[in-house]
Image 1 (cartoon, rainbow over the protein chains, first blue to last red):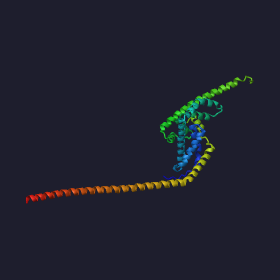
Image 2 (cartoon, rainbow over the protein chains, first blue to last red; image 1 turned 90 degrees about the horizontal axis):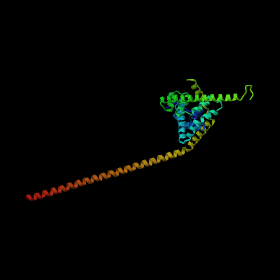
Image 3 (cartoon, each protein chain N blue to C red; image 1 turned 30 degrees about the horizontal axis):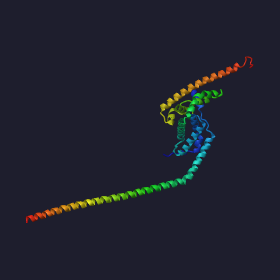
Length: 193
Length: 110
């Protein structure tokens, strides 16, 4: 099939590098690995440049390959048993990590940290939904999964994230009020320490 | 979309890629392209050698097949000739026998 669209590698990299890097970063939680994945994805795109039919096709292709490569990287990491340590850190270290964040740390950073604790399939669906603004049908097509499964992952992931965010928010409020009361306790009514 | 989902959307904005990504990509691409150009004559030589080998093998197989078929046809022809000769010998033998019997019968009548 012939098509008029002429892909320009450099322009495609410029246009989509942030998308591919962000997808890989949110799926793996590792900046170095995300950069490696993004590099692999674009090198593969270079090999398949002639098969890309339009700008929309290139975007779809990049999203799909970025998600597949991220899943492969997570699988390899699980095989190497490194994931065990990541899970331990995620489950037991998250509290310490979020607590260690300055009180002024944005809700966004906290949500990103909570996203990393979700199962891979739910994380993939949520990232494509809220980072890429895709519909469940588009997510299903990107992940080559049934729409019903994607909807279920979105609902469950959102519910889990909401519950975890609420519990962390309560903890944050409790922590801040205890700090405030400690500060207030150290100061006398006339303002002398 | 509720407030929490709106927060998620804001939290999950795309992260800028490190500048090294594009730099490394362009360098890697240029390296691969140069490698391809350097390897181009070698690839042609390999292709030509493969084609020549395939032609030799095909020619050999065809010639071998033809020779085998000729041998087989000659063998079948010889076998058929032997059978015809045998049939002729048997017929000749039967005719001789009949001839002898007729001659004996003629002598007895005389």
